[in-house]
Image (cartoon, rainbow, N blue to C red; front, side, top):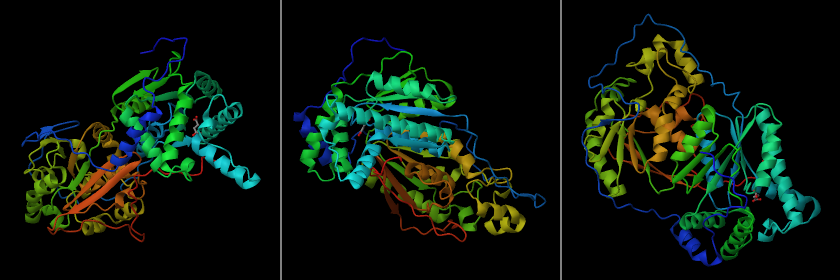
Amino acid sequence: MAEQNPTSPVRPAFQLELQDLDLVDNALATQNKETTPVHSLEIGTRPTPFGAGGPIRLASQASTPPRSVVGIGGKVAKPDYSEAKIVLAMVGLPARGKSYLSNKLMRYLQWLEYDVKVFNVGQLRRSRAKQKKEQSGVKEDHTASYFSHNNVEATRLRDALAEDSLEMLINWLKAGGNVGIHDATNSTRARRAKIEARVAKEKGIVVIFLESVCDDPAIIAANVALKVSSGDPDYKDTSPEDAKRDFIRRIKEYEAVYETITEPHLSYLRITNVGNQATACRIHGYLQSRIAFYLMNLHLKPRSIFFSRHGESQFNVEGKIGGDSPLSERGLRYASALPDLIKDNIGDAPLTVWTSTLQRTIQTGQHLSYTKLTWKSLDELDAGVCDGMTYEEIEQAYPEDFANRDEDKFNYRYRGGESYRDVVIRLEPVIMELERQDNILIIGHQAILRCLYAYFHNLPQADLPYIKIPLHTVIKLTPKAYGCDEERYTLPIGAVDTHRPKPKAPQPEVKAYSGREYYDGNA
Ligand code: SIN
């Protein structure tokens, strides 16, 4: 997959001109509007096995565990990722989605428990300039001319900032980090050669470059619009009109010297128009391959992901966990009401329904006229010997297990069953497929939906097992550039509350934030 090495710089295929400001205006106007695809529905009534699918258990198989089984459910240790040390250096013009890719990748790898940090050179620049202003009263000019390669002094300063940021990143990796993302333009061969030479001095650390190429004027315009409308500190005191002009001029300064990656010896990935095309060169080993695979599956098409737990089940009513019981009478009413709720929400847009292999999820989806797939990976957290018991019974039969679970619910593994950590690992293919898909409705289980929800909202592990996912409620997540918007629809059909709050602790606050977060650099 290596490419030739042309001698002259290769210019990006699409360059945004000042007259393209109209595109940016259109993107700004439509940024928050939902688009409604107009494809017809695909009708399917029988679930199709999919992914890590397996046989569907139709009858309840919940067993009563032998009371003679006593003991403490184990705690699962974090996987040992200490050998994984990667500098992931971004490459690309401004407004080509580098920060978007950096943040998505960080969220995915953190969810898999890698230690990942983004080192954003623009934020370091702003924080250093702020310090300088506070100390000397001198305000640096960061308008487009600062980014011109003809501006010798500014070019020296920008190179120094990129190098300082790389030093911080390497020190952070040496202190235990796994993947440090150098979020900068790194748009010339000379800059990349410097990064390569610096990383080569560190034993056990490797560098891969990730180039984000974009020649779709609509995507570039949307990115420019996002920059000028998202509270970017570079344009804090500037009108949107002036900000647009200046940012487009800045892009042109970078375009004048941009060299796409053609160095045949480098390890690199090139992603074109996020998800349209991917090139991988010298990508080795498990983690690098996972990164490549994940990035290849991303897309920017507007879509929504719907989560619903199954309708209330007979085990829910009896306060029992696990099992494979059918729906209660109220659960069946929820299943009957669900199609209208979904239809009201997405109209005629295409949708695929994913269920687990357990009958309560399949029954919940029975009246939905969309393609349905069952995933074994979506089955509820396996409660092992406690499957089919009430919490009171568990507390009585396994008091130490019960206390251990309360102390560290994410890591606690049921005897003969699973922990939340195990479930996160089992859900990885589901996340990968969700990133690739369009509109999806997942009819799932409490623990499963907590794990998926935590991924989309980037919630910490300790809070994950306490996220509220009530019965008879549809949660709609709409991915945005830097997170997800969320809406919840609760149907007026009563159901038991299966949420067990964290003992002696406040319910964690869930921040549904989809804006870009600007912070004061990485220092
Ligand atoms: C910036 O200062 O905003 C970006 C610096 C760069 O990577 O070129």
